Amino acid sequence: MTDLFNKFDMSQSSLGQHADYIEDYFMFPKLEGELGPRMNFNGKPVLNWSLNNYLGLANHPEVRRVDGEAASEWGLAYPMGARMMSGNTVQHIELEREIASFISKEDVMLLNFGYQGVLSIIDAVVDRRDVIVYDAESHASILDGVRLHMGKRFVFPHNNIENLEKQLKRAEKIANETGGGILVITEGVFGMSGNMGSLAEIVVLKEKYNFRLFVDDAHGFGTMGATGAGAGEELGVQDDIDLYFSTFAKSMASIGAFVGGDASVIKYLRYNLRSQIFAKSLPMPLVIGALKRLELLREQPEHKENLWKITNALQSGLKENGFNIGTTQSPVTPVVLSGSVAEACNMVYDLRENYGVFCSMVIYPVIPKGTIILRLIPTAVHTLEDVKETIETFKELKSRLDDGVYLREEILAVTK
Ligand code: PMP
Image (cartoon, rainbow, N blue to C red; front, side):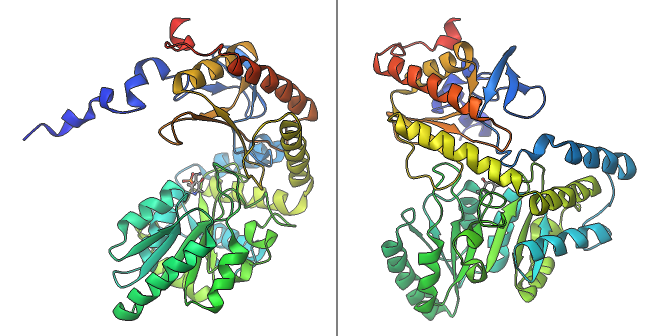
């Protein structure tokens, strides 16, 4: 046998082996200053495209004022205890009602965190007789929820409806034997590619197969649909989404999350969602802050309009200049390039240090070896000037990459 902690050898981990010199720069970077498109990194100003602050509410003066006032009036402790025991308030209930009306669902339940909420929703709605069918590119919170499942699960390749139907046939066979049901899980907008889940095609399958649909719309809520109610609204299928989930961590620029559905389903979750039953209630300032954000989302459509103005300018500008931005249908803008991990690091170092542009980088092992994705998140508070500057920068960066400038073994950030 061995000491339990022996496996924590960082040299064996594909990212961990670089930890000593990538930390604070590529990993766990510190962005300083007011949240927005212009922040400081490593002591220098950068044009920032890495925040899911889609609607720009993170630093909206009304939001800042209400957050501050709520914190000073209530503190962070109130209410104490889990919702079920001693942590319920009129404001928690009001927020749930407001969200339910906004997303056109009978009822909504607040969740403290999106990740834990998703995990726990999956855990609460299936038992060992049930079968889960889920999209292969699902977020970690879905994958980890599926891992908790004691029954069968089938995965379909991302948005592949033909294959989904194949998996539904297999699931149906098993559910018929066990007497269980089927849960299909996908996302409204996938956060890495920006693709929307093929919700319209999925709900058509409800005519042939008996399943319930759970949609994680973390990136769609606030950004998609005529009123910002999300991917279900955008695709005209909100009524067919049985469990509609989103987090406050993106468009709402806060912490917390919610799940909406039929009143009877939400009632069941209130009594069975372990992540909420056994956890302290969401602190009051977050609830009051969320009410304010929701009000802005509903009453100030200009935030979503600005977001899409910037998104369209950025995406069409990149495409016109020959960049591959994949198949995005949302503000999430991946710029797909080719190169090694070392080239990616050198390029991003150059981008940050010499061009003053900050975005996130996705490399192997998250995506296949040889592919680099620079992911840009436009927001309502970027300007068309920011877009122009970024496209010019990306043109230079790409020609330097193509010229082999970043082809060196050691990473520039280390040799500085
Ligand atoms: N689902 C998706 C698709 C996400 O991108 C995230 C990350 N924010 C979560 C769930 C988890 O949400 P939270 O940050 O509120 O835990």
